[in-house]
Picture (cartoon, rainbow, N blue to C red):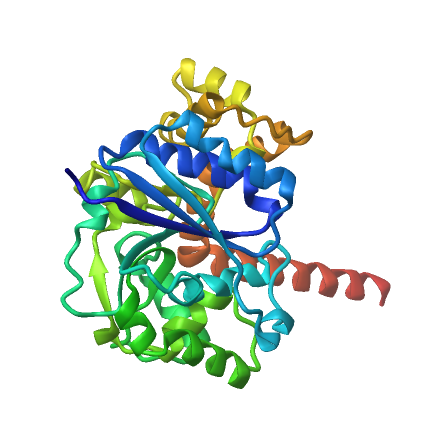
Length: 337
């Protein structure tokens, strides 16, 4: 009999419904039994009942366990962007919250598992505390890589990886004191961190402390290198919606556009979320879904072109406009005289 796969999520009430979609997709596509471990950062009893109901929908979910982390004041007070909460830090506390775990997969709630997660579970960590997908493999192009290293003050030799999906060896993780080291890093950090926990862990850990894994375990479909990554690794396991939140989109509009052959790639990837959401009964309604969808499609179509133009000719255009304004001002001044 196949070994039980342990999957952990960390969230509060805000992400309860999104967790249900992600966990359902993981259980549905995994041939082995699944045990789910939730780090509870503020989940209501009403939502806990919805979460427990998952076991009735998915026979291979053996158990769903909740654990509450010990809150750390410096993490609770650290200034972060509005779309984050202090819950992001407590993924690093999973081995402490569930001390009996030997190995566990952590995934963000804004994911779906579109393949069998046992392949992720079976990756060899070679004695390291955890495995993660390096951002250069999918998320970052060369320009983003340079700006991120410059922003965080880390060297070119230091790898930068995403914390949205992790394979954790719990004993090694605790021995390495990674959670405390991140707390210490946060204490000494005065600058604003765009991706607070992810930036902090990349600032304080060495390359040898994590195992680089294939981008198929943390595929961000709208990142700069995503399409190239997809062509090289078509069997995606974890889709991470880090740059578009599908539950804010209009499913009807995306289906209509996809049916007439428009935005095939972008619409298809977002509609994967809605496929699982419909099956599990995800009912959240966003009143501005059409405007969000149009804005998302605009970014997918025109922003890459804008970045290209800005890099090649934008400065020349701006200089020409500046010279034109100066000439017009001179003529106006001469006319007055």
